[in-house]
Image 1 (cartoon, rainbow over the protein chains, first blue to last red):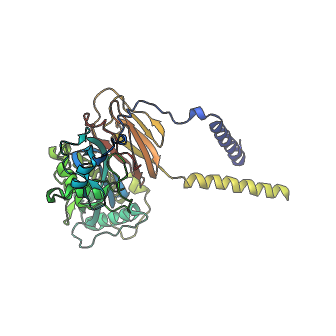
Image 2 (cartoon, rainbow over the protein chains, first blue to last red):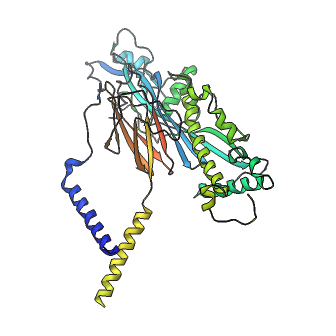
Length: 336
Length: 124
C-alpha cells in the first residue's frame, strides 16, 4: 500500500509536470476567433480647406437598447444585485464651415467645447457620426427576514449569512411548532416572512455627465457638444479633460423611458416594499403568467427560488425525522 | 536526525498542499442565457462552448436549470466576458461573482440595425 507521503510526492510531481507542459505548449492557450465583426470605425475629421474650420453639432440620443442583465447574490439570501446594461446610441453632426460663419454661430457648452446648433447652407455637412456608449444600471436588492408573528428581523452574520439564517430558521420552525402535533406543523417557507426591496444603487458609464446633460436637459434647450472627457463623439479633443463625474441615479429612469424594448421593470414581482410577506406567498407570486413573462420578475424570482431551496434544507435540518434532521446534532429544549 | 528533519519537511509540504486544497476558492456556476447558435463566447479570454440547435433556451428563473446555452464554473471575483455575434460589433463586459451561489447573465437579442454601430472611440 502506498503511503500518504509518497502519494503527496507523486501528486506534486504530477502538478509540476502539468505546469511544465503548460509552459511548453502555448498553442493550448485560449482559443481566439475572428468571427466577430469589427464594424465601421469613426475617423478624425478631414483637414478643412483654407478659410474653413471643422465644427460639431450638439450631441443627441438616437436610441436606447437594453443589451443584457445579470443577477446574483452579494451576500447569500440577504443582498443581491441586478445589473442592467443599455447601449445608448449617440449621434453628432460634423461639418466644415467658413471661418466667418463659425465665429458668428459657435457656442460654448458647460465643458468648454465649441459647437454650432444648426449648420447654415454655406457649411459642408458630413453624414452624422454615430457611436454607442454602454450604461450599466445597478439595482441593489435587499432582503429582510423574520419569523411570522415576531417583531424583530433576523440579523444575519455579515461573513456567513447562511449559517446565521440556518440557526434563526431552525429556531423559528421549532418554536412555532413546539406544542403542535407533527401532522399540523407549519412549513418554514410559510413561517418565514420576507421584506424584498430593490432600488437603483448606481449608474455606471464613462460619459455620465454628457448623457445626463443630453437626456435631463433635453427640454431646457441647453446643448452639449462634448463627452465627459472633453472630446467630440469622434474622439477629437474639444476641451480640457476634467475629473470624471458620478452619474445621477435619475439617468436610470430616463434610459428605461427611452428604451426600445419596454417593459423592462416588469410588474414589481416579488417586491414587497417596506412590508413583510411570507416566503410562500412570494413564491406563489412568481408562478403567475405575468411573472413568467417578465424578464425582471424572472431574475428576482431566481433569487427567491434559491432562497426557497435553502429554507427547505433548513426545515429538513429542523425536522428530526428527515435524514438531514437525524444527522443534525441534538439540540436542547425538546422542540420538534 | 537528518531523516527526522526530512520527514518533518515532507509532512509540512503535505499539510501545506492539503491546506491549500481546502482553502481553494469554490467554483461558482456562471450561466449565460440568450446566446444563439453561432455566437461565440469567451470568459477571461478562454473560449466557452455555446450549445446550439434544438429548442430556444429561454431564461426561466429556475435555480435548477441546467440548459443554459453556456455555463462555466468560475472563481469568486470579477470576470471579463466577450460575446461575438455574426453581423455585430464584438463586445466585452465584466461580471462579478460574489458568493458561492450561481450568477445568471441574460443577453438580450441584438438590435440588428444598430449592433454594427461602433463604440465611442477614445479621445485623441
